[in-house]
Amino acid sequence: MRHNVHRKIFFISSLFLTFCLPLFQKVIPAIIVVMMANWLISGIYLTTIPKLLKDKWRILTLSFASLYLLYLSGMLYSTNYIYGLSDLGVKFSLFIFPVIFATSYFPLFSKKETGIILRVFAAGCIAGSLMLIGRAFYHSIFLHQPGVFYYDSLSWIFHPGYYSMYIAFAMSNILYFLLIRQSVKGFLKVAGHILILLFFTLMIVLLSSKAGLLIWISVICFYAILLLVKYKRWLTSVTFVAVAFTAFILFLLTFPKAASRVSQAKQDIASADSIAKSGRSTGDRVLIWQSSKEIVKQNFLFGVGTGDVRDKLMEEYKRKDVLTVLKHYLNAHNQYLQTLIALGISGLLLLMAMILMPAIFSVKRENYIYFAFLFIVGISMFFESMLERQQGVVFYVFFNTFLFAGAVVDTG
Image (cartoon, rainbow, N blue to C red; front, top):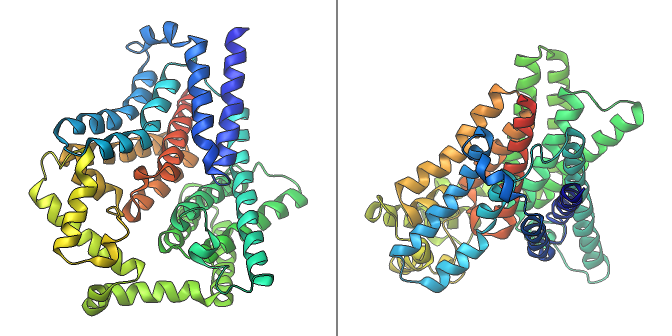
């Protein structure tokens, strides 16, 4: 009876977390504290810890915490302990969620509860998007502010790249149930799901994150290929692609600023003079990556340490006279580079293994929701240091451990 109460509390807390993640991030730390307190009070770990060496899935789940332990060891050769401790605080979810999942009774969630959590996350994305659109309308109509439906003016409380990632994951889940599982029945339900997909596509266009646009295209192509190759449903695949890209192009034509950002990105990459002057996000990223590579060359084996990443980046920006980047204290804008700078080659290899190995596992088990999640995260990490912000780290570690547990359930 007591176990069921704590399990229910954890499930409800998970619903609050997934709903608030794309809507109201300030409450996320409080929700995590509730989940930790519930786990500690339950005492479940007293009976499950002895099973760690016996149950393979528990060890594998716990292994996701190894990156945090590596960051913790990176404090041993850091000089900036204040920044290092702050960074460990941001990344603490990397440790606590794998521990909670690995030491809980199995299965933690039923298949029905898993579906509810995914739907609640999608509902959070809808609510959050409506909030952003509503604010944009208010500022446009009553305050007469221009450009409020675009990029960071629209996504004023979230980084546009992170919010695009959330929406892309919610879209992926809907596409899975709509096209692959075909569990959405009835004209009204199918039409409702299609309208949500169109709304999410519109949001990604308005957010105008270049990484978000790339992820959207990648998700559409993934499900189209899956339909064509795996399920031999070529007509559905072709129709899906035609409808999706027609809507996408129409939205781009309606909101040309999004298309202009992509065109400008190509110019920034192609033009050395443009990069040198920078002032645009793509040019800034190229300058940041160039600076990051210089630090990596000198600290390839062990990195600079968890606490000294920002200081080393600022020193390199200053040496290269990259003032537009320096004044904003920007990170490496690439999680693979960020981890390589901090922890060296061992950190990079561990991070890549945490993406690639579960991806292989999910494909073998035909768990396409989990694979799509890892695919989305893997692409996002090329453009954002997503484990350096709560917006990224909580999204990654919760859904990674949650979906891994679901994949284990599917294997029996």
